[in-house]
Length: 66
Image (cartoon, rainbow, N blue to C red; front, side, top):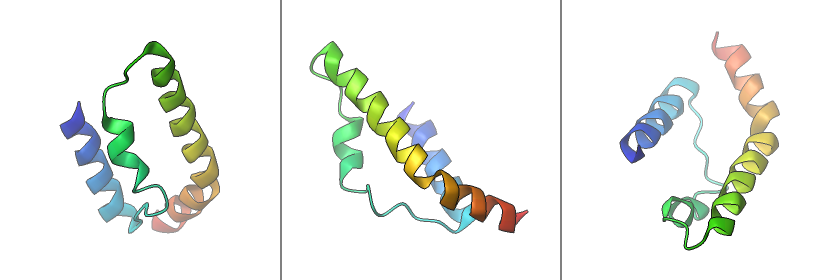
């Protein structure tokens, strides 16, 4: 699973010429296994929040690449 995520990140970085530096420090902590069931929910919320924050920027880049 980790290899798939890293591969996807590398592919999108190369394809869209986009590096996600804002949340880079949070990535290693997010990849660690959750200590309790509540932390898994926090991780999902953090991912959803990051995607929503960067949605417009990503959509703009996707439109210009195609």
